[in-house]
Length: 294
Image (tube, rainbow, N blue to C red; front, side, top):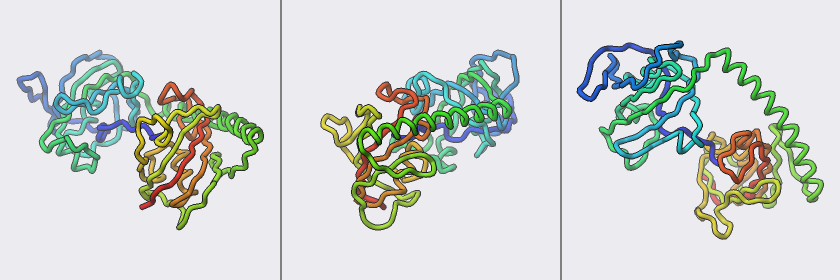
C-alpha cells in the first residue's frame, strides 16, 4: 500500500566542476568535494545534464550496510530520477553529470552534508559516516522523450480508468453495494462515520486495514489471522507516503471511521505490481478502520 520510495537517493541533480585530485584508493575529488571513481567509461554518447531523467541501477551503502539496492528492492529494475541542481557542494548529481549511458561509477558523500538538507536518516547511521553510491547508468531521457512518455502514460491511465470503472460497476451491481464516487475515480463506502472532522492532509493517522483484489484475494493485512505485521499502520495522510487512492480515501474519513475504499489501478500500483499477489493493473479494495488521528 505504501508508495515506493527510493531511500537514500538524498538529492540528485547537477552542475559540474571537476578537479584532478587523486587519492590512494583510486578516487578523485571534484572542486566541490565529491569523491568519485569512474569504473567503466564507454566514452560515447552525451553526458547527463540538468533537466534529464536518469535511468540507473543504484546500490547505496554506509560501511557494510546496504541502504538501497535497485536490483534487490526494485525487482531488478533500474530506478528513474530527475536530475536537478545540487543541494550542497559535493552532491551526487555532480558525478552523474560526468556519465553517459553505459557508464559505471562510485561516489562518496558525507552523511553530515546529506542530513543538513533535511533528508531522513535511520537511527543506526552515525555522524561522520560516508555514504557510498554505486551507479550503473542505463539510459538518459531528455525533455522531449520525457514529455512523450508522460503523454502516453496519461492516455494509458485514462483508458485503464474507464476499464476499471466498468469492472467496479459490475462488482457493485453483483454484490448489491452502494458506494460514493470521487472526482478522481475512487469509490468509498463508509460503514461507520466516526467523530470529529475529516482527516486533513499531513495529519498522522493510525489504521487497521485489509487489502484485497477484486476477486477477494487478501494480499496484505494487519488484522487477519496469520498476518506477519499485526501492528496498526501509521502514516501522514495525503502526503505521498501511500498510494494515491489511499491518500485520497483518508480525507473522507474521521477518527473511528470504518470504510471500504475501491481503488482503480491507476490510483494504486498501475502496471507495476509490488508483489506477485497483485497482478498488473489490479483494482484494489481496502477495508480500513481509523484508530487515531493526530
